Image (cartoon, rainbow, N blue to C red; front, side, top):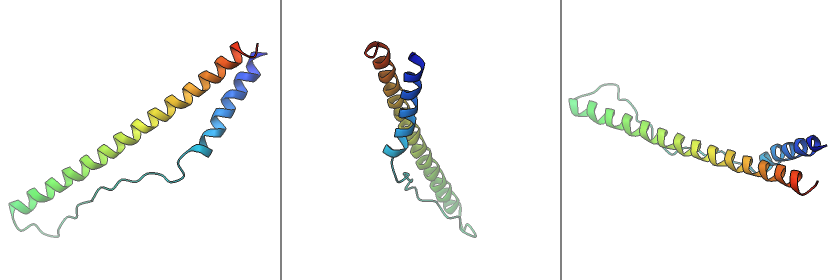
Length: 93
C-alpha cells in the first residue's frame, strides 16, 4: 500500500521542478580574446597568452558556479522527496 504514495510523491517532485526552474538559462560574461593576424613583439604574445588564461579562468569559474547550483538544486529536490516519503510513512498510516 505504501508504494503508490511513494511513486506519487516522486512523480509530483519531478513534474513540479520544471515549472519552478529558472526560465532563462544563465550565461557567462567572459570576454573572449581575439588573436591578431600577426604578433609584432614578444610582449604582444605574452599579452595574448595572459588574455587566453584570463578567459579560461573566467569560464572555469562560471562552470564551477553552475555545478554548485546544480548540487544545491539536487539536494533540495532530494530533501523534498525525503520529506514526502516520511510524511507518507508516518502520517498517512
